[in-house]
Image (cartoon, rainbow, N blue to C red; front, side, top):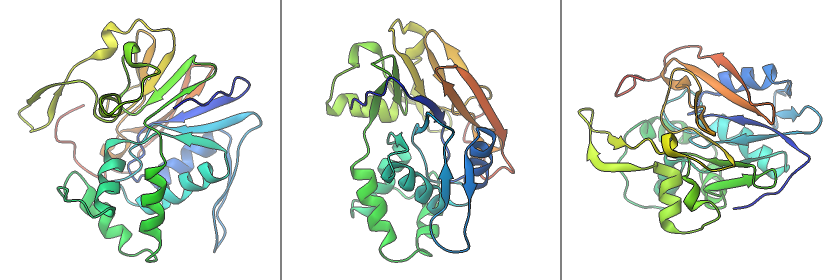
Length: 251
């Protein structure tokens, strides 16, 4: 789970959820040069010395999850960045493996989009998710990226429990009135030295708490797509072009 790059700066992007137009717009604002040929792979040229990092939940609910997947898969293949797996990505992977999963929370939208892709593409997506880490330690352990965050006592550990925490976060085990897990605010007690960057739970604005920041600003719900520039600790956002899905609870 460790990737040491002390001389590289990062642009860490929150939950995309298939919002491909907003992702292209955000990359352009961040200074990435994008070329979209009529055929073939999209071209991405990063600003010198910078790499992309995605906090996971690339898919579901949004207008073009396959295009988001292609872009991120290309970034990883060319060693131009990193991505951690999110709970929506994990669920799609399990579906593509033939597991029995509930087709809800936007997975139906992604599966419908994948049906229009070449037959080999879903298998490529499955293999991509199978190799994806559940957290990353970067910049000589000064930066940690996990989809739902990770309390400091679990940093450096690898186990099923740690994976579950990274994908789903800490919960009480109960459901709220919307039928969603009641989450515990692990960040309010965080006292670790690495900056933890995460998403998973949508917020209206980037939420800084202790040495952590939640950058899931609910793009797919009509909010914004946000990136954190590191080590600058500056956030950059673009507004969603439309509301692609209604949230099950306000954020």
